[in-house]
Length: 207
Image (cartoon, rainbow, N blue to C red; front, side, top):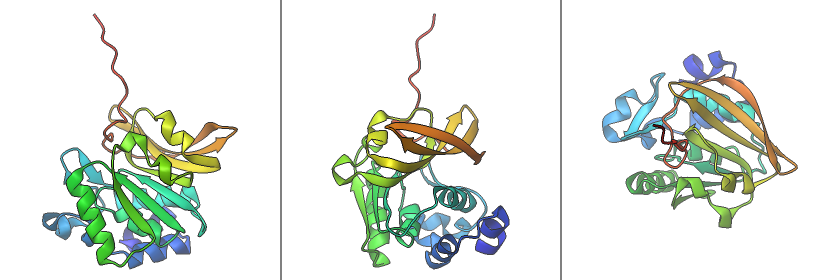
């Protein structure tokens, strides 16, 4: 996977390569999906929920420029793969997952790998984990149409956030930085992901 998907995507930072070599992706997918865990495609975790394609995650982490002292928040981490990878790169990771089964499986998978610097909180994704913050980095592990202000408030000044912004079937991976309390975003690459619960745009009724 690293040699055929990650490095060809121009992701060459050693911490990302080392983390993805170290974390067994098949441990963070349902048993039936283990044969396809390393394919160049998203993996279905539950209805409407996917594990990001490995190259998409790697490119987001590359653009976020994770540092060893960073406190990281993962929103919608599914069964914990992104949290496990980040645990190898950052100081600490808090993952929020509102799907009860996925949260339990993520907690078990992280514990099975003796990962002690990543915790799983079951709760509403759009609310984040304010009591555990603020965070230097927030990774939204899925698609968004709107971004709740509460998550921006949980980011430190100069902190970074990654998300895939969906507009119908089209999506853009963007990196934002908090400057003077506001987010400044830049386009990184094209990508798509199912919109996470709580991150859909409000639909206005029209006659």
